[in-house]
Length: 267
Image (cartoon, rainbow, N blue to C red; front, side, top):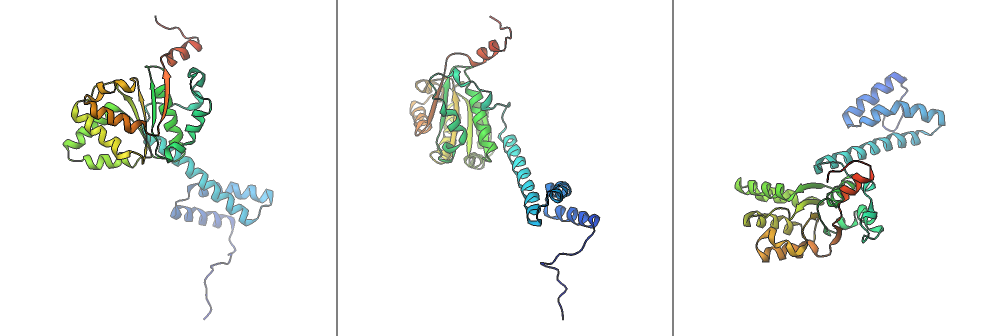
C-alpha cells in the first residue's frame, strides 16, 4: 500500500487557500506576527527574489522580534515603576565624582547577574530615584525580573503577609526576582517587627540576587531606621558587600533641571 503522507512534499495551493492555511496554523501555534506579516513579507521576498528558506527565516525572525518586544514591555509593566525614567534623560555631569563609564557599565546589568548590590546615597532631589528607576528599567528591558517598591510599602506588605500566614510565599516571590529596587530606605523609622521582616528579604537575596536601594541617610544614620544597632549593622554589611555605591550629593537635581528648562521656581 502506498503512503498518502505529504510530509516533506509541497502541495499545490492557491494563494487564498495558502493564506487561510497560514491563518489557521498560526492560531493553533500562537504565531500572531507570522499571521499578520506572512503576506507582506512574502510579497517583499518575491520582489527581492529571496529563496523559500530566506522567506521562512524572515517571518520567523519577525515573530521572535515581536515576542521580544512584548516581553520587554511586560517586564517593565511587572516592575511597577511609579513613573517612566531612562538613563538617557539623566545628566551625569551633575555627579562630578561619578566616573563617566559607571552608568553605562551598570546599565549593562553584569552586576545583577553577579548578584551585587547597588546603593544610591544622597539628599532628596539629587537624582537617586531617577537612577534607581532608570537602571531598573534597563534591567527589565533586557528580560530580567524586576520589582520597584518603597521601603514602607514593602514592610507593610510583609507585615500583612505575616498576619495572614503567607510570609514564606511573599519572601519567596521577592527572592526570585533578578533585581529588587528598594526606594526611600531611611526615610521612616521602622518598628522592630517591620525591620526584622525587611531583614529577611535582604538576607534571602544576599550574594545571590541584587538589591538596588536609594537612601537619603548615610550608613552611619541607618540605626535610626532599624533602631536595633546590631540589625542596622547587619543590613549595612549585606548591602555594601561587593556593592556599587553612588553618592548623588546634596545639590538638588530636580531644581537644577527645572532652572535649566527656564521654569520659574518658588523661593
